[in-house]
Length: 168
Image: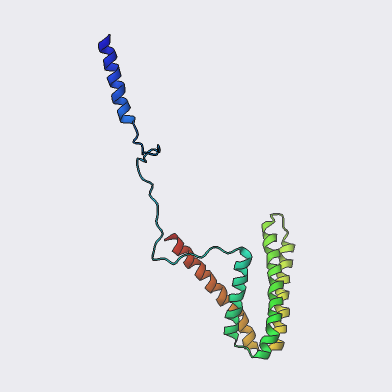
């Protein structure tokens, strides 16, 4: 009987040795595998903190204004008349486009509503086009719309590049 008890105690001791965890002096267990932490890539530029949506929108508007100003090359008199009118145009257009986005989210929206909003956007563009023509020649008015498209394309390209950079 003593023989069996001795064998049982020895087996329990051997089994316990395999399960014992090393312990540091402060009582915490040592990790079996250290946690792999990704270090920031030293070659990449340090990311700026994310701005609030309103701040990002304001920065985009300022960049767009600078881009259009550079493209149009307006005289001081034209510049003085153009920017208040253009800002009103942008505000009305933004409101109509927001209305269109809300309408597109509504599954029970009628086609009449969709067409009414599209006509509203066309009306805004045609009204302000006539106002722009009172301030500057037609080639510069056309340049407004081309500049807006170029700016939008450039912004989309930059956002794609940032996204690709973040994924790599």
